Length: 125
Ligand code: HEM
Image (cartoon, rainbow, N blue to C red; front, side, top):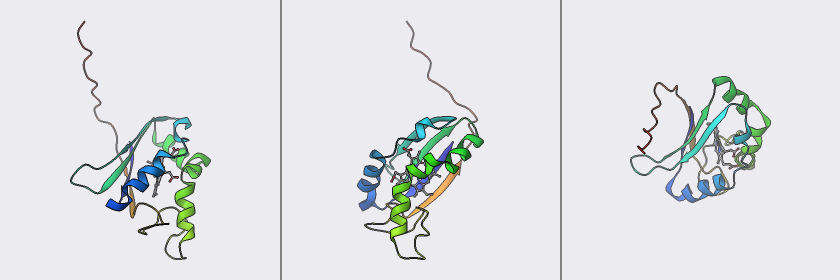
């Protein structure tokens, strides 16, 4: 599991969801991709989870180094570049707030290995 954790101010929630709604749709064709979910916080946190599941660490690394990742994040990168030098680094990883900048104020990557994965029992009949 690779989970990108995005800190999103309340007033930016609609914006980040809009961006994901218009996402490039490229991750689903990546080699070794097994699933993606955008998770909105309900209570206890202001952080969205961009949950992705991969066959292997190598498959994830290959995706982040490839063209599909760059294009899937092109807008975030472009918006970071528009901001004054020294603020954005042009990587789409900015810490800006408000309009024109990235909709998130911070991003953090979590990695997990699946220890157990229990599907529900099929219904009788
Ligand atoms: C490093 C800072 C990152 C930020 C601020 C960020 C933010 C975003 C945003 C705003 C979008 C919506 C698309 C757009 O605006 O063009 C997006 C797409 C996406 N992000 Fe990130 N992201 C980052 C890195 C990552 C990482 C490391 C992962 C891996 C878990 C990831 C997974 C995804 C996925 C799966 C999509 C959908 C792309 C597609 O449809 O192909 N992101 N990200």
